[in-house]
Amino acid sequence: MNSDLLSFERVGLARRSRLEMLRRRYSARAGCAPSGVVFLPSPDAVDLIGIDGADIEQLGPVEAPITAVRLASPNPDVSRWEALLSDGLVEAGLTALLPVSIASKEKENSEIGENIKVVIWEFGAWDEIESARADGDQISLTWADEVAARARLAGIGLDLPDSGQFRVLSVEEARALADRLAVPSLRAASVRRTTKETDILVSLNLDQSGPVRIATGVEYYDHMLEQIAKHGGFALEVACEGDTGIDAHHTIEDVALAFGEALASALGDRRGIGRFGFELPMDETRAGVWIDLSGRPFSKFDGAIPGERVGEFPVEMTSHVFRSIADSLKAAIHVSVEGENAHHMIEACFKAFGRALRQAVKVEGDAIPSTKGVL
Image 1 (cartoon, helix red, strand yellow):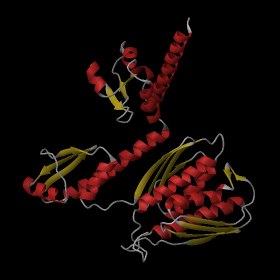
Image 2: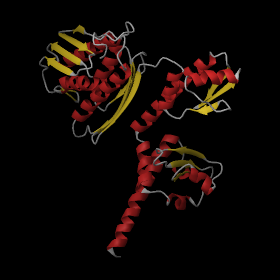
Image 3: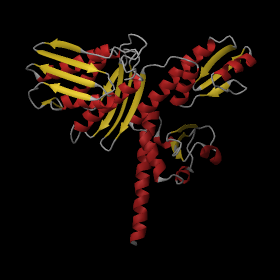
Image 4: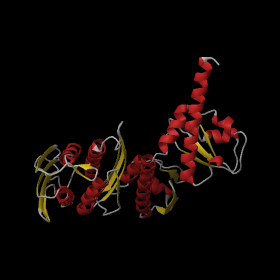
């Protein structure tokens, strides 16, 4: 057998191997038999091929819309259909089924749903609209006075279909619709940070106390981030896939950067916030955190924490976490700690930071807390 043919066979084997991995990953998530799943280049291919009685789900993004099809019964043409797939489409499907990707999609759908709820509530208060309801991402309006309703909609820059039915297909659309209807925006944000070492999703809501779900792959760090959320009084969800088999450094640093970025996004223009500080004791330890949500990054850490590690958490990363948050949050963060036990000292720092953050993000008025008029 010549080398070109061998190379071609290797490529074919590699593609089939990745495709079977995709099939196993999808069937495990969907709770179906691998033999009942086929993958096509796009949702349109289902109609083109003429598959009846099947459930379809687009996995990949618009530019690579690989689609999973759950067949009602076995079909001998499966391998011929899947020959239409490129390596890029298969990889898009595998990426979409990573835990962090699934969490990101679920979070996006949840945010769209929450925005749709408040939009429905707002439309329901209009005298010009008889009823407003939602079915998934579709909103249906029944006019009480269509001419008056359209005049009011035009006044806020909205032009809806004559049927009064329309879909909200993205978080951006949902937010824009809420903004047009003058629905107060939530102080919430989601940030996806992807590097060669980590893939991270951080979601938080400063105006809710839960849920708090943390999974970074470094258990002690999970515990510390839970302390920030608990004592900060806000909802926080973190999902991370990192190269912890090499070292915890990249995971700890990148999660801190994503967390700071999400905080900055949720705070918006920082109007009305308390802006500043906190200190607390914990057994033999005392920690103080002074924070200024000034829009200017600066970090200072005072204290010598004994030892090298607490669990899988390198002690030296404590100061690095607060420096990373300060950089992406654009805040001045000063931390001071004294004590004897490394576990207590680190935990006291994170608890104090959570308490400082609670005070700093609390809304106390409606003005920018700065003589400059901007933070």
